[in-house]
Image 1 (cartoon, rainbow, N blue to C red):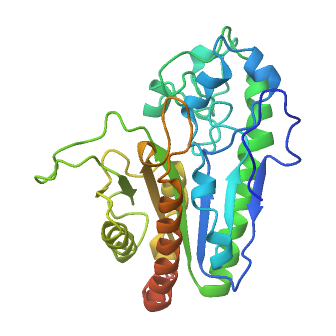
Image 2: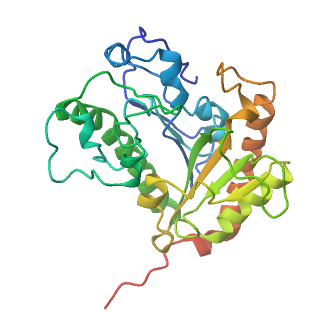
Length: 306
């Protein structure tokens, strides 16, 4: 059963991540939802001037539920249970803003990335509405506690799923699942004035075989969605870190316009939620068929140096 969004007073989950295993025969597909976590520790909420409803504006609400049929179709689903406002597992382990901390950070910390500058490092400074999360500065020990307790277990689980798929099939297909706010999306691209529904990110062809992106785009377009690629989301840390087509690991990021399936102000599901989940179930089936047809092209390609 899928994890329900708790309140700030709900007891912590027994694990920071949940790995929903495939029910049927295993496929090379792996689904990951890094930003749908909704367990907010009480001390975290109390340290913020924001109400819980405001902190939740950074969530990819219900994305794990939208892709919740994947295990029934042979694809494991990994999801983080803590929110990205608490610690963002789709970042480098130590991508931190020095202005947020009460003492200088160790030299190995990445303090200069574009994500840090935007306030969206591993420990975010702002929520999606660009409001400051914290009243006062944090200790580096607190950052390490979250990284060791949530970020590292998530990636340990993800590496294990990828390694298992590669060992069994010779390749792995990672689908990194996200949602995006409806405001600020590109419009009127190539004469199409419809709102963008879905953005596929493959790091402009670097993180997966181009036929995978094409297969996903075609299927989603046939289902009636306006799909674009790599604009404004070309892929985050997960697709960059794991996507390695030459070594048989293909990573594709999917960003879904939240306005399709939920009210962005109230976070309530829309009536179209069930249809979208059904369409994503069909997408999973199609990508499973794609993997069977293209398996020879998706396996390890790089030749070792003599």
